[in-house]
Length: 498
Ligand code: NAD
Image (cartoon, rainbow, N blue to C red; front, side):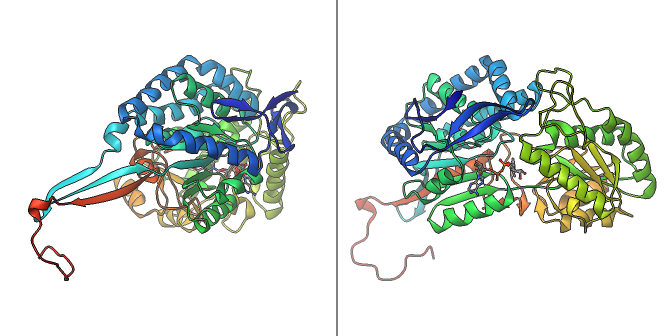
């Protein structure tokens, strides 16, 4: 059985804790590897090498740091097919979708090639009499990233690319479900010229996370995963004096106005609702058609499309979506669908018993479509994270708007309409972090920043964009005056600019 250890100081290191977890192929249900689960000792070893390597890396000029990312981007492109295969085999998503996962991370690496410009400071000549003032952005020191299973390439790169470009050393704790791509990314960073010890991968579960949260030498923690863990990581990191940004779960709505092009809206719902088996934090899981006629027409369009979804292993090039990640996820999703039926929602397409010949032990769930879902139902309140779309019918625009406004989560939302007034009003009033106007998955590009509101995010700086440069650096402001500009005598009054 293949054993996946840790990657510390530029080397593969076997686990010491004696604890491991199985890594499955979700399409077949087979165990394909065992991953080591770190305890305090492995984390401490990673921090030691990071601490030793970081000062020289921070002192390297920013253009040198940028060049590592130029080379890394080239290596990602050259290794794209292999990386996608490794990713799909552990996650289950299709190869093309895996390439999307890698490319969205690659784009963040392209963004940080601009680090000499992005991280430069500010200068004011003559801020006071003979006084100059300048601010500089210095690295936090050692940063850590804790990532979810659903984007094993993109989300690690969201974090380590800006952190490392800013001059930090980094410890990545990937999801124990699909740990192979993060290790491969760390190897490629070394090949791209990164000094050993700057990017370390420590595999594990809660034990490794707690070791990160309590280690005194880690200055900043970035987390992406489910809301209960995001809340826990944020609170624990803060209690231990670390800066933290923690992103959680979602329930993303799409409002379909009566004037929308319904074919476009239905296609958008299919991709955003069922792509990657619904395991995206920006997946659309609730469709809100406005008016009975819009709702009836939408259901008529969606029903045959959901029934004819092609579900298969990643080796099926024509598959629209693959299995879900684990047997537990499959059971949880099926349980929630049962719950929706009990609660009285109408299950228009039932994918619970979907089976694929030759892959009977795979974790497949067929596409499901619910109609007449109401805000009181568990299937509306809970993030299902599977290929399940719920339709909630709204009488008018105000009622449609109030649904995502009142929902616990605030990650993404979309509106489909031809009416500019409605779109503008929606974008302005909605209390959600990322908004799409006729765009179903409004994930901002690398040079803007990614982050939700409400229970989808804890902390105040987003992923990538200029927010990430602020998160991974500390500001220091220097006020300077030379002796020729200093007046004689002591000053006892608070200096002001009067
Ligand atoms: P998860 O919360 O189970 O795991 C995330 C990370 O936390 C993993 O590294 C895991 O090892 C660790 N972890 C798990 N349990 C822990 C515990 N008790 N204590 C400490 N650490 C623990 O999430 P997941 O199932 O891997 O990912 C799916 C979730 O992530 C969904 O809720 C999805 O919406 C969310 N997500 C959010 C975003 C976003 O940007 N908002 C992006 C992607 C995924």
